[in-house]
Amino acid sequence: MSEPDNLLFTNDHEWVRVEGNTAVIGITDYAQEALGDVVFVQLPTPHDVVGANSTLSEVESTKSVSDIYAPVSGTVVKVNEILSTNPELINTSPYGEGWIAVLEMSDPHELENLLSQEEYQRMIDK
Image (tube, rainbow, N blue to C red; front, side, top):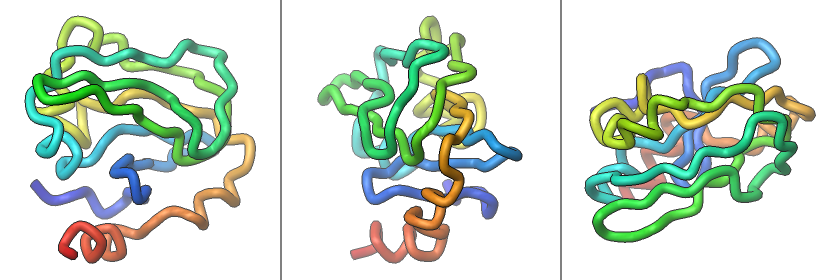
């Protein structure tokens, strides 16, 4: 599965889709593949304030439990409640219905620290 062109990425395999002053966040296809079947997602709490690179969420699979880190600082304004009952959407639609949360960014300049699609692809190809 190829990544949509309008995303930015972290070294920890999260993706960000910028929509105005908000950042929609999920995990990459590469990450969900490495995790295996996702069985539970610990969603962040709306109105939580998170810093860049701090734990935003947790994803549990048949293989392991992995922290999901906030790519940018901000306030959680929306969470994907559907994942509470359908965590497998992270596997089947990592860039679509499997998004995890939306942050209102407190410092959009932090986006400059993220990877482009080409940079991310080079990283996972190594």
